[in-house]
Length: 486
Ligand SMILES: *[C@@H]1O[C@H](CO)[C@@H](O)[C@H](O)[C@H]1NC(C)=O
Ligand SMILES: *[C@@H]1O[C@H](CO)[C@@H](O)[C@H](O)[C@H]1NC(C)=O
Ligand SMILES: *[C@@H]1O[C@H](CO)[C@@H](O)[C@H](O)[C@H]1NC(C)=O
Ligand SMILES: *[C@@H]1O[C@H](CO)[C@@H](O)[C@H](O)[C@H]1NC(C)=O
Image (cartoon, rainbow, N blue to C red; front, side):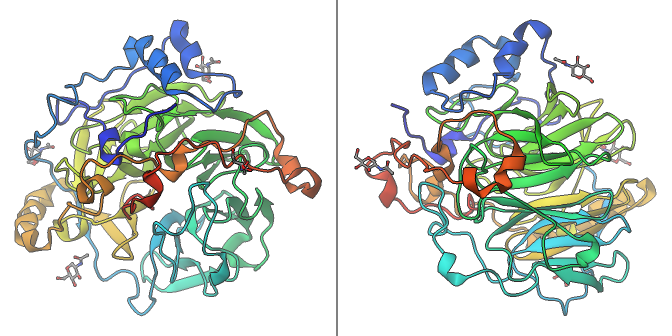
């Protein structure tokens, strides 16, 4: 049986060099290890171990977990090239937990927030079934577009539809795509909230699954031709590419978040694919591989692995990723609070060609608490960060290099705003107690499916195998930390 693991023990201890980003190309002769046919999501610890053993190229240039267990990192001297705009948006518009942010075609900043809902240990059971249905859908607008300059609300919608908002993106026709982890659904809404009725609903409400269904899907990314990607998600750990019509074109990815804790995960394995961005020029889909603390990029054409980006500066949790086609391509990421390692919770900018972390940004030159997603303008001049708690949308504006010294000075002044990173991680609060996570449990066996039939009620409901878990007897009684419920 799979061994259960402590959440923190999964936290990978990776690159030895604070500023270096590891990035490796998969060579042709090992590609078969990373492109398993989509027929076996029930990966065992043994199989995963074997894959790791057979794939030396996937190793980070890393210290071992045991040898670096309690090491703190050298403080990193990174320049901050963005200034914080605390006055934005209009403070009269109250937001709940903000889970996602994106630009619409007109440059408005569109956020997805949870209003009065909080994802806690009671929100889902171990079979990923939503437990708070009786609350009904969120009755206030969950989607709000703010003017980039004035911070005033431009349009809003999304009431009486959602239970636990997660991802949001706006496509080239201004359609708004969202995911709801409670519903296990992906929806497409009308441009600029022009209608209250979704244009498209994918997946079966409240019914997680892998065949013709999703399980806590996290994000959507849409290509200019209308084809789109879904990261699915907390339990299935896969990426799907679908045609504009909703037919599956590609699917890839496996869960590395099961069984034993491994120090590194090979390409194509995810420990929660949590956010998506497209690099328009390079034709890559880049995935925030959350608990692996890395960004993995894949060819949008065929789903093959292209490169990955990790830095010890950023750490072992990476929640959101954005991209700007400047200076050969830059990734903008936000990390998350960690149990053990003393990483600053910040936004970071990673140069895709040199693999270096170029700079960082945080509110008032200080740290975030629980950033979840971000959006960056195409010219890199503006960054918006969605934060869960405190519930906020943050704005940053690029400052030219001549002012960077002054900005660095500001950082010192704002020391008092530094927020503790020792935050609500299960293993911190509950010692070395071993337990598994809801998303560790695979749901049902899989076969290929067409999304068209997701909407076909006749074929949309199969019973989930809720006995798929082999959870420790004591696991169900452990209180889960809240930082993971994101
Ligand atoms: C930070 O800025 C200073 C002065 O502009 C520059 O000399 C230094 O190389 C920069 N550091 C990094 C890590 O970019
Ligand atoms: C996938 O597509 C990329 C770019 O289109 C190409 O370079 C690569 O060889 C392709 N890989 C496979 C396995 O077809
Ligand atoms: C940033 O500083 C401003 C001015 O001191 C303050 O009003 C605001 O609350 C601060 N914001 C954060 C997120 O710390
Ligand atoms: C799980 O297993 C138990 C005992 O083996 C069985 O009684 C129960 O019906 C199963 N539940 C499901 C959902 O398959």
